[in-house]
Image (cartoon, rainbow, N blue to C red; front, side, top):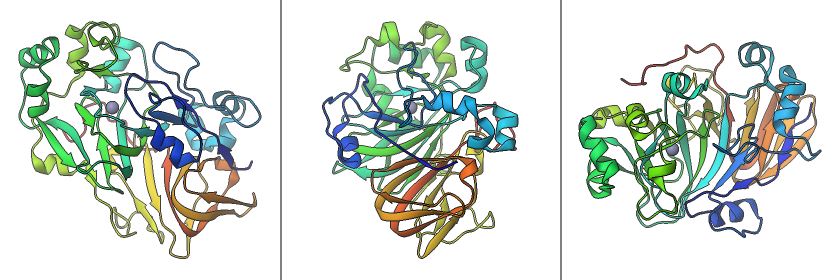
Length: 357
Ligand SMILES: [Zn+2]
């Protein structure tokens, strides 16, 4: 089975963005509210079945292709644990304006209230910044009590809400893990690769000034009394917060001792493994990539994926490639940089309590 180059799949949303994605991919941008490109997606937009699904060059959806041969796409261990479910959604995301403060349910909440196996722990790898002060908002500095939070949301007191959150400056190459429940907002002009659990579940804490009726559509149909129970209201000190972030390193493994390979940097802490894994690949000569399902996003330069059994493939900035397990071992060569997005580690313990709790 050979690797598959995937075309654009931009999705219309209520917030601005999209031109940076089109530029990245070398396509034309028609919609200035298409800020997300769902890559190798077997996930639908919440409440809109079918929207968001990726299709292959042969016209099938990737979801159908996965169902036809889960072992070839994912390998035996993943297929045994997750079947034909990739357990992962990858997006290109451009915040054309600061996103509203929101959060996502965890697995336990999603199972109990939404009949869904997955929550939406997510993570970002910053690809480009188009703002003099690129930043993200992440977590409350001090614990917020439920009545105060409900008051901010009902009264849309976004000044108080944003004022209570950490502002984290970000730069190209940074990687940030966002555990389910943690309130967050990506700042204007930040373009990133997002890895997340394969759902579209969001609770909006802010909507004033955005093209959405949050009072009606911001609580997943649960009402805010229930929906706000998924919010992590705890205080995040600087040290706890810093553990979520992996600053850009110089090609060294951020988790030394774990499978160190030249030019390969592991991007997220161990706590991310039950949700997804990612590596930044910057070959000095050639970087070996062992067989495994992955979505490769080429972020810089130009190079070549060389497979032991499936030939080779030229890749350049903006290319997204679905690499099936059955394509076998390969290596990336050339003056190129890529983010290799991988599904959950099937052997990692499932964390249902908040990580870093
Ligand atoms: Zn989010």
